[in-house]
Amino acid sequence: MNHFTQEIMEKVVSGVAESLRGVDPEWKKMVVEMDRGLSAD
Image 1 (cartoon, rainbow, N blue to C red):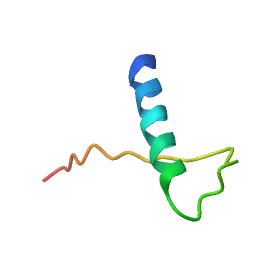
Image 2 (tube, rainbow, N blue to C red):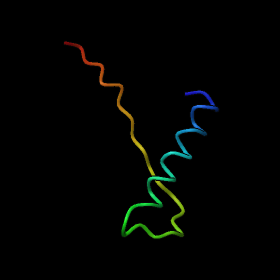
Image 3 (tube, rainbow, N blue to C red):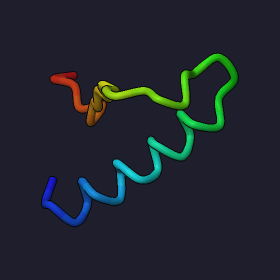
Image 4 (spheres, rainbow, N blue to C red):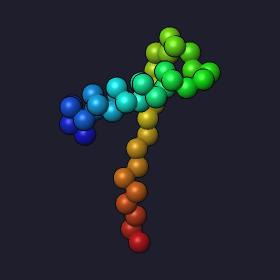
């Protein structure tokens, strides 16, 4: 992903995380795994 796309993803994921119940508003790190869904089949 290019830098622009990474920034957009960061903002989207941050907004979602902060709106979830039980997520500490002072969170420092989040890991997002992405799978393109491509298979050898």
